[in-house]
Structure formats: C-alpha cells, structure tokens
Length: 46
Image 1 (cartoon, rainbow, N blue to C red):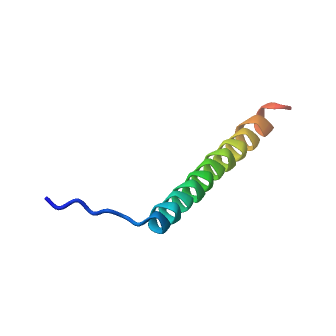
Image 2: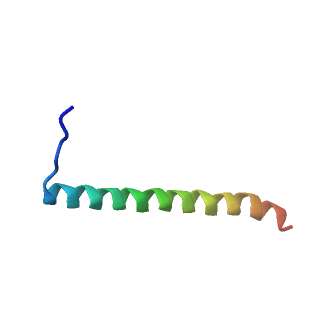
Image 3: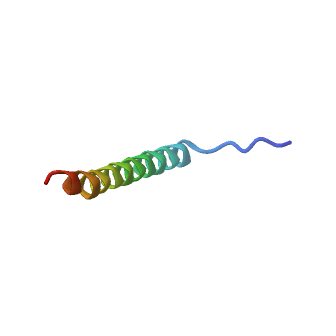
C-alpha cells in the first residue's frame, strides 16, 4: 500500500480541526451532564 504523506500545512490544519472537534465533543458532554443534573437534581430538592 502507498502511504499518503501530508504537507506541513495539511498536518497543522488537521490538528486544528481535531482539537476543535475535541472541544466541541467535550462541550456536549458537559452540556448533557448539566442538563441531567438540573432535570434529576431539581426534582429531588423539595
């Protein structure tokens, strides 16, 4: 198989995209966690 080699610019672009995706994913996890806490935590307070 031929190995595809990326230029420096392409590698930096891919890395930036991966970091942005990681932050977006982490943000969604935090959002779902907070919504879950509000839904279940709010019902048990009183």
